[in-house]
Image 1 (cartoon, rainbow, N blue to C red):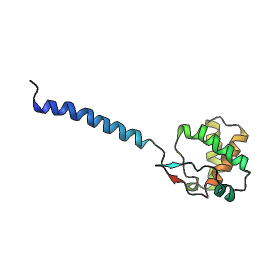
Image 2 (image 1 turned 45 degrees about the vertical axis):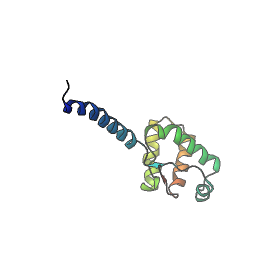
Image 3 (image 1 turned 30 degrees about the vertical axis):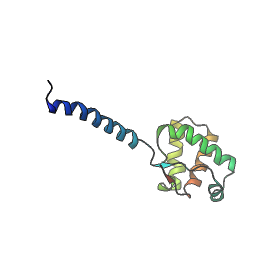
Image 4 (image 1 turned 90 degrees about the horizontal axis):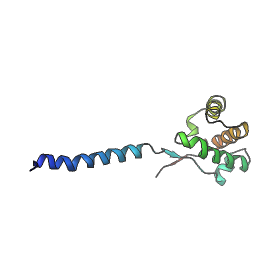
Length: 118
């Protein structure tokens, strides 16, 4: 007959493992959601709506595959335009038009606070 301690361990161990896995999965989620192209975002941007929409689409398809949305207001404009975007565009194999569209989108998003994820 199994001791009470071993019975408890057989129940507790899978339960704790499940909790640990759940916490790990939840911690990998994005801290912020990339803002969609809204009238407010369009208003603060100097870029055409078509460019902002393309930038958002490319961001979701390419950038969000590898990392969560990084609040662009955490970075200087020069940092985004001269360092981050060229480096990330190269890594994700963006063409010049898509790189420019994502940059337009991020520069507009800098001016709109990101929404916290649910």
